[in-house]
Length: 253
Length: 72
Ligand SMILES: Cc1ncc(C[n+]2csc(CCOP(=O)(O)OP(=O)(O)O)c2C)c(N)n1
Ligand code: SF4
Image (cartoon, rainbow over all chains, first blue to last red; front, side, top):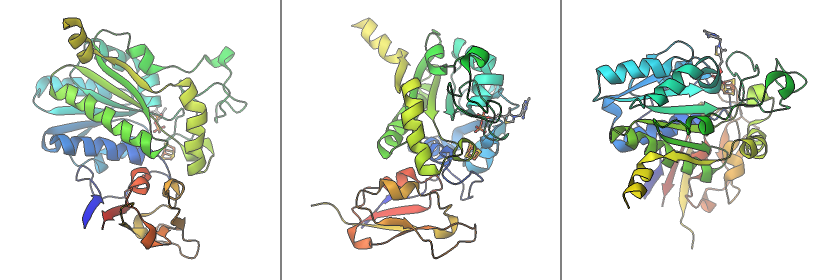
């Protein structure tokens, strides 16, 4: 008899505060498992954001640092430059990274800081009660777009991965989703690859993970996964947008 | 022949979200509407342990890591 699935050592035994069915929990697990499998838990320093994952420092079983809203990439930059032998990652929501923290993420990528970013896009501000985010879909109802997001008024949702992939310093950019077991397994591979890139000293890596917010979307958890699949994936296509490590290989051939 | 497995839930940690229920290919998971755990939710449980094939789909989707899967 063999245990084929059990709780990773990369997470503390604490039960999270996340709402039932919120996929932040799955993404925490993938991040923690990737660190455990790469053997970096003892040398890891994570930077937690502002947003529902503001308490991530209680859950990841490694050193953690808190950052002001959107500033995690700047804090991670400082940590990594002072302690280059540490494994440094940020975990950020879309309100954090794609709104108030856009300057920080763009310039961290531009400088190709040797850090890894787990970017959780749930198309809404969860923690504050479901306001419209830059990533909220056209027509999506939120507390600040009760009739649905009107692009004429609020602009179209921002595609962060596509944008960052145009930056030469962005070594690895991939978008994944956690709406099905197959996609969760793929998401894990992407996060692990992003982390390996940092360990290889190859610069900035980011994985955008399409996630749910059943509470503020007002959709029961299993249907929230369906909503993600049917509405988010068509606008936010999954896949790798940049892998400069492969480009190097093909350039040399 | 499919593998045989055993699935165990830490029911006191379960938030009753039901994400595991839909992804079980042999349909042996359900929320226990007869009980309420300390968190105030109807926890998930296995209705027929014999049929588990140890695919780990349920644990893969569980946001709260309440599921352990063993292959027998
Ligand atoms: C400087 C500052 N501005 C605004 C806020 C309020 N605020 C807290 S969380 C949040 C948005 C969080 O959304 P997101 O990053 O998408 O994370 P989620 O909660 O959805 O996981 C905002 C605007 C704050 N805490 N600090
Ligand atoms: S408010 Fe939304 S993002 Fe925050 S924990 Fe609840 S479901 Fe998750």
